[in-house]
Length: 195
Image 1 (spheres, rainbow, N blue to C red):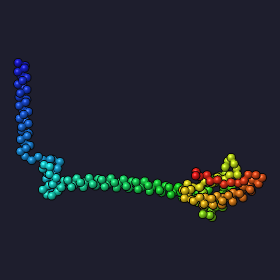
Image 2 (image 1 turned 90 degrees about the horizontal axis):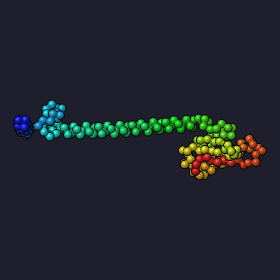
Image 3 (image 1 turned 45 degrees about the vertical axis):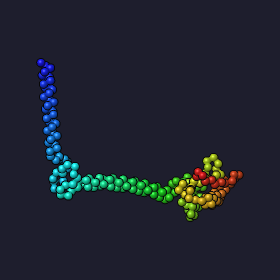
Image 4 (image 1 turned 45 degrees about the horizontal axis):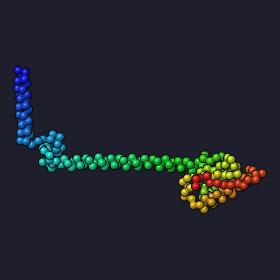
């Protein structure tokens, strides 16, 4: 009895599902489908089927394309503006640092009398902006070390570097003779930049 009841229910359920399936197939194929998310913004009518045009002439595909390109253009514009402002702020920061370095040269030099005298003697020459620091070698007091700013190091030809060394050597020789007259060591000038 249970077996018959079970078979009966199974047959009725199959029959009902088949009828629903046939009804859905007939209903859908007998009329046009409505895609409810396609509503014409101009005339507020539904756009049926896979059409991308409304009867009033409005194009859904063109609207999507316009939205897509506007997003792409806005994104690229934002990226370009962001990169421009980032590099602009770095260049402003860089110029502030260089102005500070050039305006306050004495803050970056060692304040020994020899260094100040040499820097002062170069103030009126074309090499005044080239030197970053001048210091006496702590182990060998007769050697003066000159550090040229890295920006100018590659721009200066070898002849200019030698000429700068000779100008500094002349002044350093005078200073060294005045400060240590009894020394038997010869004053020397070395460029401290990596070569």
